Length: 237
Image (cartoon, rainbow, N blue to C red; front, side, top):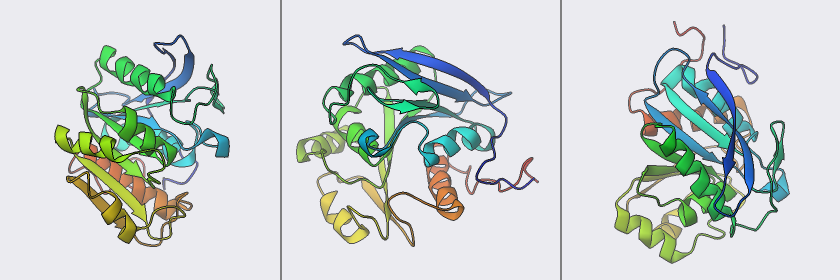
């Protein structure tokens, strides 16, 4: 069977709730490999909710649908405060990246409590700002950034990641609306170990199956080296 845009591969999926330090309940989902223990964990941080972003934003939804089966990666998705998706609506109200620090912390703490291994942040757009600004936790191994606009990520946050030594990969679409590859190299200069990866032909929203596959391949290879390119058929043949 060819893996298509709507394909959802076998996994152990469970609805979850996260409780933040300021008392907000967030809704989410945890997807685990069906028959084995996960090799690594992707904690997904979604695009801007005021522009329609949620845990169901298509790259993150497809990560949960494919990565547990194809790469042995646990995928934790959740709606930040005030965000709605098919899973439901998280409590609280959108705070432009401020109070969302509690949301990021709650997700990291949940993953740690559940014993999920090798925890990475996977942010997309607004989610990359959350990762860089609020995600530098001792239990996090590194971050993968899709279409980072660097809207709220100030220089001190980038320098803190540099001091941590934790790896960061930034996937920069050739035709991004906010930050394109040449400008990204300069913008990420304070984060010295950041690997800026230009993605030819891609746009900010990663529309089209070819671009989704490229994004998922990059995520999988970063979290589980040797797992990409991901199989295009199921079962892998």
